[in-house]
Image (cartoon, rainbow, N blue to C red; front, side):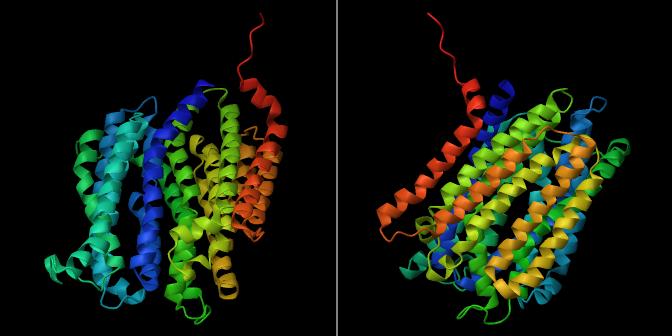
Amino acid sequence: MSNFKKLAGQTAVYGLSSILGRSINFLMIIVYTKYLSTEALGSFTSIYALIGFMNIVFTYGMETTFFRYSTGKNLDSAKVYNSTQSLLITSTLLLGTGLYLLAPSLAIWLDYPGQAYLFRWTALILSFDAILAIPFAKLRLENKALIFAGSKIINILLNIFFNLLLIIGFPYLISIGAIQEGFLGYRSDWGVEYILLSNLFANGLIIPFVWWKAGFFKFQMDGSILKPMWTYSLPLLFMGLAGVTNELFSRFLFEYVLPPNFYAGLSARQAGGVFGANFKLAIMMNLVIQAFKYAAEPFFFKKSTDKNSPQLYAKVMHVFILFCSILMIAISVNLDWIGPLFLQGDDYTEGLYIVPMLLMGYLLLGVYFNLSIWFKITDQTKYSFWITLAGAILTISIIFIFVPIWGYMGGALSTISSYFVMCLLCYWYGQKYYPIPYQTSKGLFYLLISFVLSYLGFYLDLGIPVLNFLVKNSLILIYFGIIFILEKEQIMAYLPKSKKV
């Protein structure tokens, strides 16, 4: 029970920064959909999908590798940190410079003529993210959850400040004559530019603070340490690329695959903005996954030498599915008021019907993260590449086949299908090479019934708002009842027993 308390406690702390950050991103959709054009939202969706993809290239699996080798018995953790950070800084300089120089060509290839500066800023954002990756990982490894969370929160607050200043503040000051157009180079016709600049400023300003708190490093690259680390991380790089293809490529490719005039009154890029905005509504599930990952990854590695670790991993998975399936239902049945509240415009709410499917997709991503522990602790990371490659191929295939037919739903289908297949493959190989006693039948039942209840609640409409709210949310209580019936023995075992008089 103490292990669960420790994991839950750290997840809560990491979750503070993750939930705050994702919640602000969630709330910023109100600002973006109100003050920016649909086309600007489409650019935001595709460029940030590119950033997510390239972020994997810039860090190439070194965070997980750092955890693995820093906990090794025969290695000096300080040398591992110094060597890993030195390697990442060197590779970041090379990759960042290359991307910066390629910016004009990228602007032409991706249909952003005359906007090469967008991709120069992207190169800087990626570089700042990369050189922060290992210091943040070190804070997690040392259980400095409060410092980690504090650093993330400072970064978030800086980002939100610059977003509000550039998107709302400056236009207001111009409108009342307090400043003139062109003040500090300000341009009222910019949109996605200010989202990128806010990110760039916030990340750049946080670097000295994070390096100070993590402990400054000594530049050294010890080949005896880096060679086995590279062998371990290379499959993780390809796993990450395939994984981010599953998560982000539906948003990146959407505007390029969708046929012209598929949605009346919307260009392909504008429809991509609608698709991306509805993806943001599923962020509440993703923030739980991210908070869990921050806490669970170092926790799993530290418990890997315990003889009872398979049983512990199975219990963590079971509780994870229960919690996240409840969250999925709670969000889905309330989309009728959550959607219009956060998506300011009728065009955006037309895509709400894909949100329950996206929530399930993110839930399956969390299940996959739990399942993937077997190849990380057994150094069989080569399997990660083949599993995620299968998911990536499926993602791209579904996008090209079904987005031209089903539009938004085709994009959502690519997400849920790829993660489901990845879960199946990871479970199959995991049980073969590192058996973990998961409650598989129960887990699948909970996933299925919660998905059905989510869509039932989404489409249920009794015509009376108050009655609608009560009946829809009663589905959550029904699900709780199902859980209690099936988990009664385990629940009663954790309750305090009354003492006999």
